[in-house]
Length: 589
Image 1 (cartoon, rainbow, N blue to C red):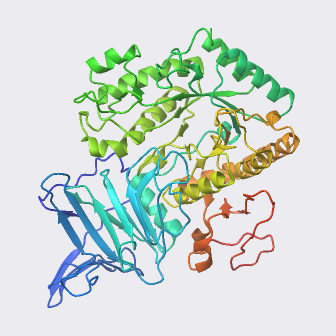
Image 2: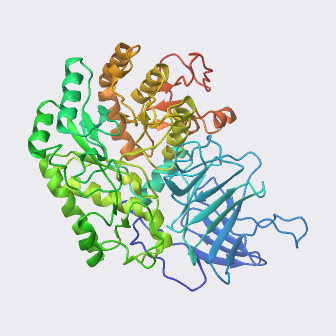
Image 3: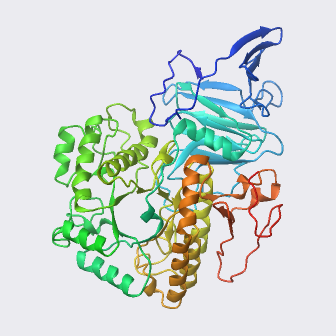
């Protein structure tokens, strides 16, 4: 902890959820001619010399982390400083620190990063943004938690905007910049990635187990627009023996006309298209379908609820009407009254029989507005997290089977599964890059993650062009070996729309259902162990330099090595790390 004003560091944080088994171990501070050292009962934890501030941190018995104190040409030409404070005449205060990078060190994590596994050489903005796809440095889900191959983890406990430079400016230094008046840093040891992430989850919370039905197939498109249309889709799925458990309704269920303006979520059904929502839900449930519906965390000024929301300050108080976001006023989840009001909007929908909500967006807010208990720069990264938390808690209270389908995230969001990779293109690079994000989010404490099978949009004529049939099939196969599988896009995604591969897709979906006992058992383990269901090879072979270059193979639970084919040729390279590949399960390293 570093502060310029002796600020008290508190544990009542939206990001923290300490495990009950965690205990505080006191350290003894000793001084000698070389400097100061803090030791617990077993090992030194912190040491610093007398001449300058360059501490050594010991997160466990084997690992030593050095703050950077030797990154310069001559002493007047520094490329990195151990710790620093930047105070601008205008603009935010920035605190920062630098750590030494070893010559053979690799890095990963930091959220849903659409990069290959090794992040060395990257400069990353830890600010949630609408990424507009998965082929971009922007990210919907940033997590201020980084893993080093040495191994150790660093978690910067803050919701402030950050920049992380991993050897980009100087190959000697990991530099972390935080728009904050103080630094609260956790150095996390454990000896292996699994144990380090489990220790991180003991600080920020463990993932919750999704309900059984959620592991089946989800069918969706943007969007079904009436009870009649959904009923026809459901009938055909059953008649043609496609195993499906969830039907998702995108904005087409709104009472307001969504076609001319997407942003009119009023949390009420269109009674012309869905005359009796309760009867409709009951009919769907009788056929074995759960219903998911689309919502977001903004209120369009044209929606009737807007007046109540503004008068009671359930949304951020507008200070500049010319700024803000196009979707409407931002719900103020820092206000307890807003949370209660918002939950009361969801409860009638759950009473109708809605099973879950797609909590879309959540990356951007109106930063010119005033929020009750959080400053706008910090609320931006926390907004999606608090939106999802309130939604997940309401479902838990009303049905006892909480799950959401969420897009944005921050530290602690893993507690409220599941999250998906959002708007990927209907291309092989779209599915490949979404997997890169999925493997990185798994290295960031999230156990569950999914994607839009078939891709959300075509690069040309997005509203009319469907995915190529081979791409649709290959994406289905990848979906079978994902924690959750949902078809979704701007054009139809039902298997019969792809007649050349429809029979093969049906076989793969049946195979998925045969795996559900295994998936459930592995998921239960993931909720306790620190492991994600999809895990990059670096989890088990951290010391193998080859796996740091592999971002298109992964372990699915403990018993499957998955090598998806992301091309039309049907040919790919496969790497088998060291071990006996004779069908026997190999222990994690």
